[in-house]
Image 1 (tube, rainbow, N blue to C red):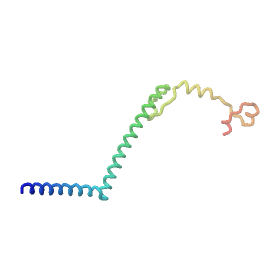
Image 2: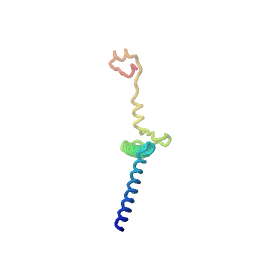
Image 3: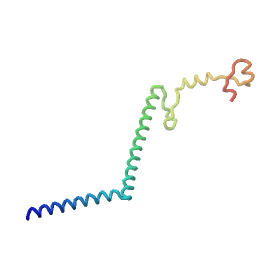
Length: 120
């Protein structure tokens, strides 16, 4: 008799456990639950994407600083943000070498000193 009562109780407990497990799985498959799971995954993906974008931005800034140091570009404190300027002597040489006379394009072609930028 004791044996029968044991197996009856074990069977009833297994039935309750299985029923509870099945009901939980069915609740997870309702449209509301699926929508909530999808929203959670979308928010999580958005956070990961934001973290990735911040990492890329930090890497770009670090690489830009390395390149500026390698090229001898310096940060001018009067300029806003990350705007950099060329060193003074390079810029002055470029301006000093730009001494072109403005003649008509016909005159330039006949003398052989044609500057195609003057046509525009």
